[in-house]
Amino acid sequence: MARTVTIRDIARHCGLSTATVSRVVNNKGAVRAETVERVEAAVSALGYRPSMAARTLKSSSSMTLGVIIPSLTNPVFAETAAGLQQRARTLGYTPLILSSDYDGALELSAVETLLAYQVDGVLLTVNDATNSAALQRLDEVGVSYCLMHNAPRQRVAAYVGVDNFCAAADVAGRILAAGHRCIGMISGEFVRTDRARERHAGFLSGLRQAGVALAQLVQVDPVNATGLQQALTAIYGQPGEQPTAWFCSNDLLALAAIAQLERLGLRVPEDISIVGFDGIQAGALRMPALTSVRTPNLEIGSAAVDALLAQPDHNTASGPSRQLGYQLVAGGTLASLTHSPVQHSPVQPFSERQRHA
Image (cartoon, rainbow, N blue to C red; front, side, top):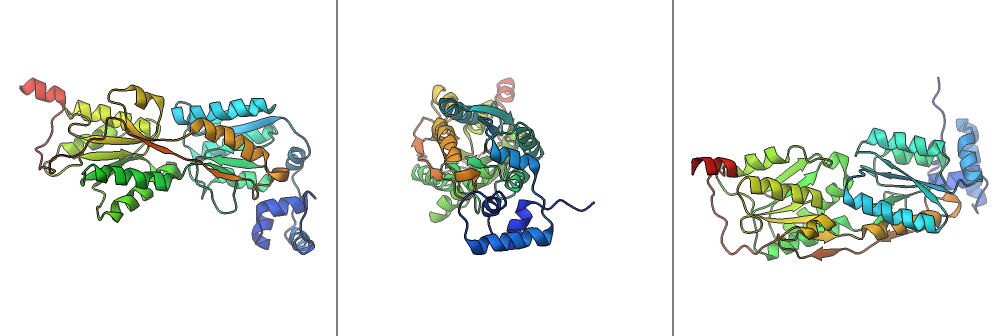
């Protein structure tokens, strides 16, 4: 059976955005006559047949907004969902919230579920905005969407988040200013989160400006940090120079790293410094408080609703993009290195050291 021709195919054939093709196909919005002719010629040549479901979505309003977030348990996305829910309800919309568990297949499945409910638009955070089947599907049916936290991809202007690259570069500068030179990074797996990838790139850039190389990179499962204990035990269980500071791509990883280091008998920040990213409340409540990049998660959710609904005729190519500010909060987990890094003997877990005392 021949594959169904989509709006995305027409757009690629014409060298236009899917939103422009959608306006022509659905006869909505001003488009130049020359562009209309190009699209109509492509429609005829490729044998495109409009989707009745998509037309229904375009012609009526369900007053519902679809929401797809990577995790319901991560405070960052919980705060974002709370912000968008409050704003959506104020404007008379009901949000339908689904979780993808950082799984690209579940992202696509969630999109199909939301399309079945005929949502008026979708607010979402995907694993990788540059290669997302979920976004491709939304492009195909011409349903508007706004990315939250993800960096915007080409031809998608509807985005709300912070500059992950610059924020991570600032973290590198702060750690370097504290005197650290043997520095590591703990991150969620790059293939499952483009935010971690951007933060890694920014952190490397900040270190390179000072002529410092990243000493260690540990990638772990972004949901439950599987593998972190094993990685840190291996690093600090070997003789030689070991990182005196770690940058973690989110606060949950930072808190998990602190717990694992303490199990190894290492103190934070006396022995090891830790910096996180997100500024979640759990980090601020611990003693000492976690040094972290604080992001405006509630505002990201609220602003994303406005950005989504501001798109004329559900046009994903012309929605407003907002990059919000961030703040590097100086907690107590980043300390100045007052001595030169030393060659350590292998560190035993605290329980082991007690047994041999």
